[in-house]
Structure formats: structure tokens, C-alpha cells
Amino acid sequence: MKINGAFAKIYFSCNDGLDAIVEVLKQALQVNSIDIEHDEESPHEEYALIEAMGFEGWIRKNNEYENMNYLLQIESEMVPQLEYQENACDISVWLGCVISLLSNYDACVVSDDGTCMMIHNGIICG
Image (cartoon, rainbow, N blue to C red; front, top):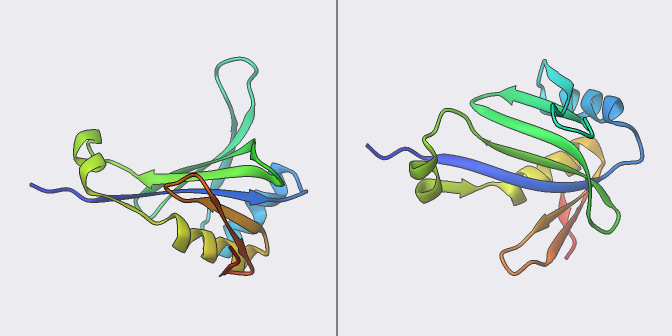
């Protein structure tokens, strides 16, 4: 049996705290519940957990890319890892455009060669 999955990794810029981001994304993505939790391991950093429509996602502070201080990662739930890797679809660009358009956050999606594709108001800028 072939099992398909999807994943996304989107960096975005926001000067608000995680609580404000959660409220914006709940409304923008029409998700009822996004929980704020803390890592079990030290330094117990705060993150947001999203579970909706067969996906699980995390929002964390991040400084990997200049001016992009948060990272949203999502992946299909309940997909065996080996099958998932072979049949996974990267929806980062699409979801980055949706989030940027609906939340007014600037976003960045990293291409295979490591360059950052900037997204502003749902439009890929470069």
C-alpha cells in the first residue's frame, strides 16, 4: 500500500509574542485550537502545537534566517516514516503564500539550494 504525506517549513517575521501569533494564525487558518507548551528538556522553551486536518505542526522562535524570527513546521500525522519520506509532498511555498496573505506576516521558504524565497502579502518576491 502506498501512503502519501505532506510537509512544510516556513520561516516568518513577527514582532509580537507567541500568544499573539497563535491568535492570528487561529483566525487566518480557521483552526480552533493551537496550544502553547514548553519543551520538557532545558531550557524549556515555549512553542505552539497545532493539530488539524491530519497535520501536526509546531511554531518556535528561530533565528536561522535574517529578519525571520519564527519557524512553522508541519507534517502529516499517522504516516509511517519510511513511507512518508518516499511519498511526501513539500507544500511549503503554497502554505507560505497562504499564511503571508492571511496573516500579513512576511514569510520565507528555503529552496533546495538553500536560498530563501521571500513572500510578502501572499506574493513570492524573490
